[in-house]
View 1 (cartoon, rainbow, N blue to C red):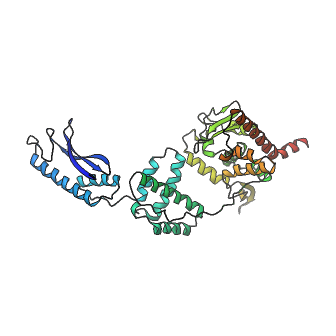
View 2 (cartoon, rainbow, N blue to C red):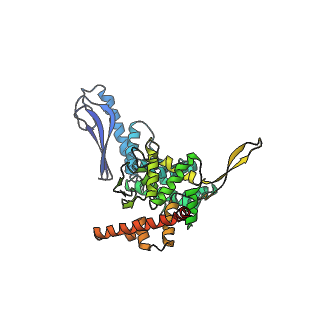
Length: 401
């Protein structure tokens, strides 16, 4: 039997339920009625107050639910459960939930704040474009419309591609949970553009190291340098490291996103910045006061783009005021530190496999012995020191002059 509906009386409080079998699963829904004693079938015992009226309502609900189930055999399991509850409550059954609704449910399954933030950004864009679009009604034409809408807003293809990948993940989750059978991505290609990633030369990195910035921006510049000194460490991982993360002069941690193990020697340049901002709960203190990870990452991303030379100019009254000139690089991002480290390392003839291992690229993972892993770490330590020495070579020269 594909579907079935059976009355059931709870033996403790004599509450009356329907046991529903649908798509090889079972669930129970309350009728909102109680009996004076257990019974079977659709007829309340005479000892129950208003037994005749309750029997009539039970029979009516049974008939309505049975008829609805017969007409909607293709309905997803969760939607069927919600609609049976709606029938019992005297509400209209729904034809389906919105894509936005499923985004919200999917986000509840994510424990990582940063991951939830990525999906929340896409959810907000869906609300702006078509908040009420039902998940079962989304098709290729709708996806094309979303694409055109976002392009008209001036967005780049790679950013839009992230939204489409997020939508695809939600559809796959909804299908796995039998919420829908619809999958509009079968013949829809998520297009991207080949990016030219920014990296900084040694001279440009020195500009960031040496430039005078306003007090409130100093911590963002310092964090960018710290990311460089720690071989392009992921920002989320860095901010969430515990206060006692340094052991025997090294930071050993697992990348939160991939689970990959990293082992980084803390060079003096990195330690100086860590000591400057050391926290009581975290290695660097910026989340100690309850600041959300996503909030600090957003501020850092904004402010490092603004770093540039500042000059004093006179206003109309003759008073000197600060005026910021053009930023050094208005397209700089956190991962620029990582790309810059790799590019400078390559320019110093550090072997590609050492660079790949330092960055945690999977093709250079060691699967042999601990001895070989230690050898890898020594090579990585030497490479990082060589990169930092190259960056600071101008300081060494100035001290000898």
